[in-house]
Length: 560
Figure 1 (cartoon, rainbow, N blue to C red):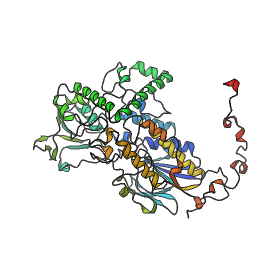
Figure 2: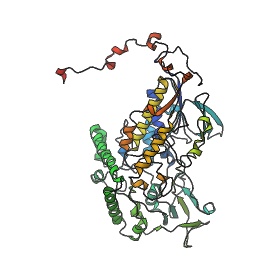
Figure 3: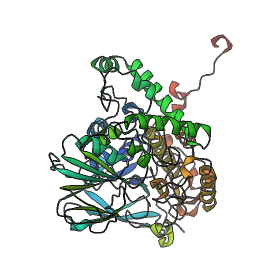
Figure 4: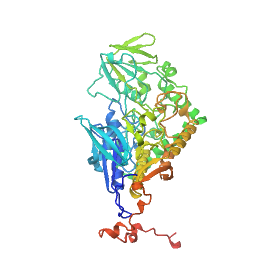
């Protein structure tokens, strides 16, 4: 029997008190703070984040050249269009300032406890609540909090790690990781090794190349460098440069003409959203490969030997595609060496490759990525003490990426199976928040103590994912974080469809796919005491149904 935390004499429309804990104050956490408080009455909310500032990945990643690799106007909230983006691909700091501005505008910082890191989450079946242990990062003190619903907004690329290379700790020079950057470090005149060819390395190399005496870029695998996203719009820009800065005339038009700004964004998103069809195996994927190869060949004309080393045998999209403006051009500069030989070890003064060559450097930058297993952030114990990390060791099973059987009242934003190959991520994050908001509202209205997806629903979703990805380039043999760093493992990080498809799925929860336990064990507790709040509280309008905003006026034939 579940503990009864409401009285049987409450009115049918009485808002049951709900406590929600959000983990993370990145984009998803900010959206949750706005939407939950807007739509859920009688809500207790706290947003914990381990960082001293909001912004998530855009606070943490401060390496040289950090920028969004999708167009600025695609990477923003639908309800907060920004006419002031300075360039086509926004810098990390510009994105951070945008989201900090949203936090201030909607006054949601008051719900946030920064410098507070979740160290454990455990579900208590007897209370139908989550018990969360939180470490104060400043004092080291561990506090304990409880909630009805736990919303994990920790993202996929958050838990960075050093590469597993022998001798890494013995290096006597400057050792940096792209996700834990030392902003005091100056590469001016230094010899630098950059390990990696993912999006971080692709941005770092051109950013520091003009300052360094030498760069050695160690690249283990091949990667596609795409032409700029929404190339039609890029070609319309009169300005030049790797990030395609907007002209003063364009900015003035955006600022003075909201309709023009909206039209521009819709054109951009239409072009970006239309790219999904290239991620299915077949002629379009082959054409994308041909176009990308032509683009890369042109930019590597000065050093054509690099093309054979970096050009993949798999189709674009098997690994994450990045436009990488300026990267290939930087590789052709005289002070840059592209090294595809495997790293054997690191010594106190440099890197040794498998052929025995030692290349001495002043600094090593590890742009080597994150733990994408979704199972090692902090221990999560579900119903009956279920160790979610252990269960997810081989495959992070979910229902629609949002929740999983065995962990009631727990939801994820941008968790397993939620990434998108192309399209708009921010609208997906918004709709994910809307979905979870709808679930919380149902729990409140229907007096639901616990809600979790049925095991059969999770199993069905996994089967759907397995079948879907067989048709796509994602399941081709290539090492990718989409497959937890394996070449041929199951695709666990991506949504099985387009971002528009994801948005449509999230529009309306299929509550028939969930199991419930009701407060007090009574599945009719939602019906209340036979009265409404208006009949018990004189301040509530008893005839609100007559207010014009609550009336659905039909059209007469003369109005058609």
